[in-house]
Image (cartoon, rainbow, N blue to C red; front, side, top):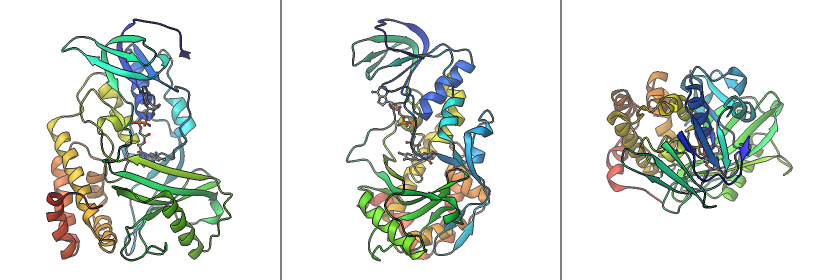
Length: 370
Ligand SMILES: Cc1cc2nc3c(=O)[nH]c(=O)nc-3n(C[C@H](O)[C@H](O)[C@H](O)COP(=O)(O)OP(=O)(O)OC[C@H]3O[C@@H](n4cnc5c(N)ncnc54)[C@H](O)[C@@H]3O)c2cc1C
């Protein structure tokens, strides 16, 4: 239910700004805990068109199986060789996920937040562009991250084809058969079923500042698929991806991508937001010092990754996918276990070839390439 009437002043427990996956999960879980919620988004009924996926073990128990459109028990990754990842990967059915995060009992306002004012220890006020203001005991900003030239982005270009045209789900395929020159920045193929009928084949630039252009990724995808026996005729539905992988603000006043929950080395945040929604809804802090340290380490890891040369990147991922699933999980998904992540980095360091090792050590101090 959307309320666009000119209400001026409302006192409520919690205002959630932004109804993407994170804000919607937060509003939904807050209601489940009996908290009064007002949620604001310019387009509260907008459907989510991006393909959202996650590792199954990241999801909270209250996520219903019907929200999953596809499940991959052992997705495959390629660096210079093939790895089977012993970890279940899931693709969401966005409509089902959105419906399951129902907003029954939430007061939904269609509007654009212009300003959030917080008083020390007191209520916080949200002003909309329309001039309306709303006050609550707590306001959480889940408005995502705006693009900006200084922020590294992930880009991708994908096509959707009938599932029978593609055999093997690929979490990440760095093989060099996409036509890129040896000195050009690398991109990888992501190939996952969206449901029983369709598979998404997507050429992806993991992160760059600037990231690879979508036209470059489209050409690379066509080249790669042609070499693997798949001709595209240009009528296939497409997915175009471009979003910042940094720029969120860790802290309890923000949530989702806006709140620093996006993993800079993968661009993932949806499962983390779902998993942390209960804690944030009930006012617990999800940013103990260990989580802040992990956040900093992850950013350091991304900086290191971006200094690797095109030939070193597949070697780095050979090393990463050689690690045990527990170690991989620690790096990709664990927000608080600083020691497990440090152990993963140590193990990775000893696994990769010496030149990559040197870069991993010296790169963070040198900053971004590109
Ligand atoms: C194509 C694509 C594919 C992706 N795939 C994955 C994936 O597989 N797995 C994964 O974990 N992540 C993925 N991501 C990355 C990331 O997790 C998503 O961007 C995710 O949508 C972030 O959720 P969020 O709710 O934090 O922010 P957003 O989805 O950006 O939602 C922000 C919400 O805030 C609203 N808003 C913005 N400004 C205002 C304002 N001024 N006032 C009120 N409301 C406002 C917007 O309308 C929007 O509804 C993908 C991103 C893209 C673009």
